Image (cartoon, rainbow, N blue to C red; front, side):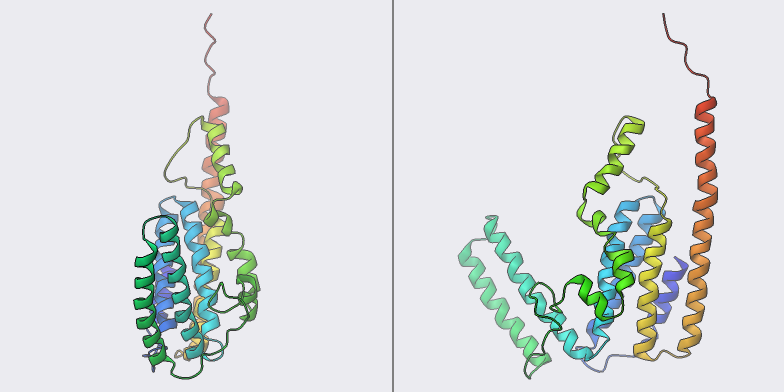
Length: 272
C-alpha cells in the first residue's frame, strides 16, 4: 500500500498535458494506480484470485502505457482511442446476436456514433492516420500482447506477470484445481476470501508498478528522477522483504502449528 502511494505521489508531478492526446497516457496511468489500489485491498482482505485478475489487467495497461510513451506519443494515443470504435462495434454486434438490440437499431446507433466519433478523431488527428506498429486488427497497436511487451523491452513483465496470471483472468483448470483441492480437504465449497499465500502476486504487482514508475520518470523528466528511482527501488525491496517475512515465516509457522495440533488431537473413539 505504501509503495502504491509513493507511485501516486510521483504521478502528481507529471507536467500538465500540452495537447488533448497527451491526456491519454495520463488517464491510463490514473487507471493503473486506481486498479493497483483495488488489488491491494483485495489482496489484504484475502481475495487472492481476484487480486490476480486485477494484477493481470494492470500488467496489460502498463505495457500499453509504456508503448505509448515510446516513439510518437500523440500518434500512439490516437491509435489507442481509434481502436475503441472497433471495440464498440463488436460489442453492439454481440447485443444484436443476443437479441437485446435489433439490427435496425444497431445500424442507426452505429451510424450516429461513428459519425460523432470520426469527427472527434479528425479533430485530434487531422492528417493521414498513423500506421500501427503491426498488421493485426485485434489490438490498438496491431501487435499481440507478447510482441507489444517485447517492443518496449518488457518481455520479463509479460512472461513473469501477464502470462501466468492469465489463468486467473480466464478461470482455467488451474484455478478450478485450487477449488477442488480445498473441497477435498474441508468437504465443502467456500465462497469468499481464501487468504492464500501470495508472495508471487505481491512481487508481480510491485513489478508492474516498478516498470510504470521507471517509464514515467524517464519520459516526463521528473525532478530528481534518478534519486526518485533509487528511493522507489529501495522501497520496493523493503516492501517485498516485509511481505515475504510476514508470509514466509509467520504464516508458515502458524500453518505448521495447526497441522501439529491436528495430528496431536485425540481421535474420537469409534462407537460400538
